[in-house]
Image (cartoon, rainbow, N blue to C red; front, side, top):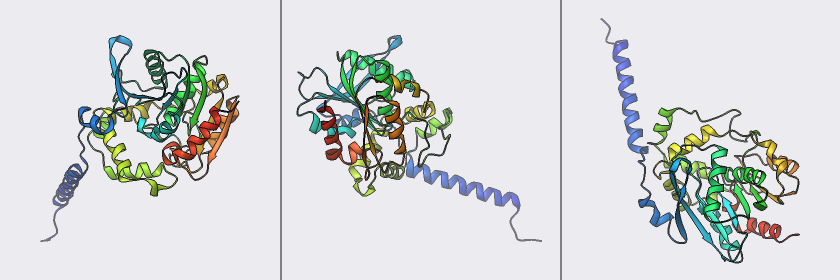
Length: 324
């Protein structure tokens, strides 16, 4: 008679180990949503402000924004952040630009303290409609518009569709082109699958956020624990993780590329030469497609050059805005 355990016993043991491993992972990485009120003191203190934006169907979206610099400036600079980021990414630029210009930054729906959209729509069209409503509520009819990554995509779509409103355009490692990524496999896309979204809304390993932020920098040694805290805690804002999954599922690069030729505003295309998310070659594609454009490359910087080296990159913006 054999002393070896039966196949059934071995399977039960493996199942038990799997359950134990899952339980340990759940204890280690379970990260419950954090209500807005618990995050405002650290991430929404003055000069932050909030407004209630009216949406189609009678719903409303709470929007976290900052309006800095001289209110006498009738053509403010409006800056839009990247996916999974927040208005804080522009703090270095705002400090410099707001000495002479009115600068408005905001958390887009699904991110930062603004939180998820009541409409559940994170398409390019929804973001363009949101931006138009936000600017109208602040009574801004003309502006310099800039954006990084997702924010850059929203900015160039808006500039193409509303050329009378945008006097100059600043694209910082902008998304929206269907070009190969150095790190994202071709055709990769977040499945629009509810159970997966719910799982994402429960777990969030902080080491994963740490690696993600470092991947966005040309020099990962510049990433501090405080910076990772910001990305981590704002991602935990109630509803943001599910919103992020939905945005990634709705992302459709290349869909609006025909709009680029309609952009009339002088355009600065600013890019990090070590961008591991959106290939630096995309800068040349934008330059060829946008009539009045120029390119500034920063070879040592990554996907968020305005955050990694605000002093050098904002100087390029000052030069651009003051050129004929």
